[in-house]
Image (cartoon, rainbow, N blue to C red):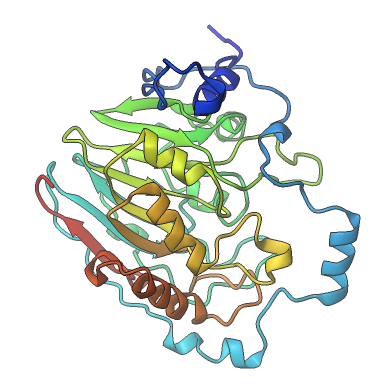
Length: 352
């Protein structure tokens, strides 16, 4: 049965303690999981979810005039120094949580016995962007069976049709509200669309879709026609991974941390942040990423969304040096910063 999602407004309002009665809990209970592959009817647009206006004519004119979308020659000179250390995927069992960075926002997650891909982009080039500056860190043929895919939003560097065509069409896909039609047109048969704060379960793993400070657009006419966000994956033993997708810094991190306490590892974007006047609303810089991890209450952070595609003007190695400095300045344990190379892995063994 199709239905409109009418619960989001009340859910969002109840997440704000100021909007509830003094006797209501400050953090709402987690939503009951929705059925897999449920067909739903969504609003035509999600513009009301934006936390900052989309760029107007003046901003677009300034961007065109300044043209600061790539670092200069000196900023590109460190490409050979970018960390690229592909290695075999770690051996895991159902009690192991492991993450392997394939590059950009693409991770191979191993949790509760499942293998989950995040925003899989195995292509050398994406539309409107120069080719990768580091190879993919995990050879596609070396992947185990992919049990599920999570998508944060529909920008081309996060939703890559050539990569997704490599998957069996019955692969479970977890996608933002409004993006299901894109997958159905490509004959995927198990597509679960979720609104913010909604969840579904697959083989004991809970997939919660959570807000982000970003937007969506894939063509000239579909801005914000589908939602954007991040994902919290919770194993049966309670361990949690947070995949932020693509996001600026803001109030959502504190709210996510309240709803999902005990996040073991946050996969956080740290790149594509300059010029700040253009990108600050939608991309964290390294210092903001560290602050977001603290807001979340996450124990560990693994940086992503850098060292793969040149999408902005900062020097290619700068995100790593700045995030390391920010982590140290915040007084956080060095071993909890998983600054992995492309192709590198981190493993959490046993119950935490």
